[in-house]
Amino acid sequence: MLRRSSLHTTFGGSSITSPERIRSPSCNKGKTARDFEEELTCLRKENFDLKMRVYVLNEQMELFQNVDNADQLYEVNSNLKQEVEKLKAELSEKDELVLKAGEAMNLLSAKHRDDVAALKMELQEQCSSLQDMNLRLEQEVERLMSQHNMTSSQMGPGMEDSSTQYALAFAPLGFNKAGGDITNLEEQLSEKLKIIEDNDRIIEEYDEMVKKGKLREKELEEKLKSMSESLSGLTQEIREKENHRLQIVKKACELEEYVSLKQLEVDKLQKMLIAKPTHEDMREIRNKYECCTTENNVLINRITELENKLDEVESKKFEYEAVQEKAKCSTCRQYRNVAELLERTQAQLGQTEVELEQAKKDQFNTVKALQGCLKANKALTADIETLNKQIKSCGCTDPKIPQKEDSAQK
Image: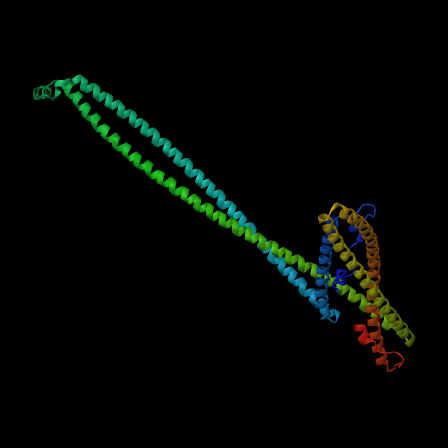
C-alpha cells in the first residue's frame, strides 16, 4: 500500500514521526472543517516527506545490493573520497578565482572612480582658469575701449577733415605719440579678441572632452554591471558545487556506516564459524526464523488494519464536510437537526481520532518491533546460509532441516 511507505528507516537505526506532532482532538469542543483540512494538509505533507525518504533509501539500497563483499564497499568508499577531494580542490580553485575577480573588479572600479574624479577636477580647474582669463580679457577690452573713447574725445570732432589731418601730420610730437598709442591699443585689442576666440575654442574642446568622459564612464559602468552579473553567476555555480560536495560527503558517510555494519556482520559470522554450531543450533535458528516470519506477518496485518482505520477517518471527515455544507443551505429547523447530527458526528470523530492516535502509537511500537525482527531475520538468514555451507563442506547433511534460502531471500 501507499501508506506503508510512510515508514522510513536510516542506516544504523530507525525513526518514525512522533504522533505528538498531530494536535490531539478534544471531545468537549468540536472541530471545524478548517481544522480538519489543516490536519489533513499536515498529514499529507508528512506522508509526502516520508515517501521521499523511503524512495531515497530504496535507491541507496539498490546501489548497495549490487555490492556483495566488503572489498567492493571499501573500493566504492575510496572512490567517493577521491571524488570528494577532487571537488574540494575544484571548489577552492573556484573560490580563489572568485576572490581574484572580486579584487580585480574592486581595483578597476576604484581606478575608474579616481580617474573620473581627477578628470572632473582638472576640467573644473581649466574651466575656472579660462573663465578668469576671459574675465580679465573682457576687463582689459573695456579698459582699452574706454581709453580709446577718451582719446577720441580729446582729439575733437574735426579729426576727419583733411586740413585737420594735414595739421595733425605736422603736429607736435606729443600728439603723434597719442595716435601711436591708439594704434597700439587697437592692435592689443585685436590680439585680446583673438585670444578670447582661442579660449572659446579651447572651452568647446574641453566640453567635448567632458562629453567623451561621460560616455566612457557609462561604458565602464555597463562593463562593471556585466562583470557583477558574471560574478553572481560564478557565486551561484560555487553554491551548486558546494551542495553537490555536501551530498557526496553525506553519501560517503552513509557508505562508511554501511561498511561498518557489514564489518560487524562479518565479525559475527567469524565468531560463529569459530564456535562450530551443531545440528541442534540449526534447528533453533530455523525455529527462530519461522517465529520471526509469523511475527512479521502479524505486524503487517496490524499495519493494514491501522491504514484501513485511517481511511475510514478520512471518509468520515468528507461526510462531515458534506453535512456541514448541507446545513448552510437548509432552513432553521433543518439546521437544528443537522447541528445535533454534527455534534454526534463530532463526538464520533473525536473518539475515532483518539483511537487513531492510539493506533498510531501502536503502529510506532509495532514498526520498531518489525524493524528489530527484520534485522534479526537478516542475521538469521545469513547464519542459516553460513551453516548450510559449513554442513555441506563437512559432508554431513540432515534430511529433517529444509533449505530456507528462497524464503530467506524473500
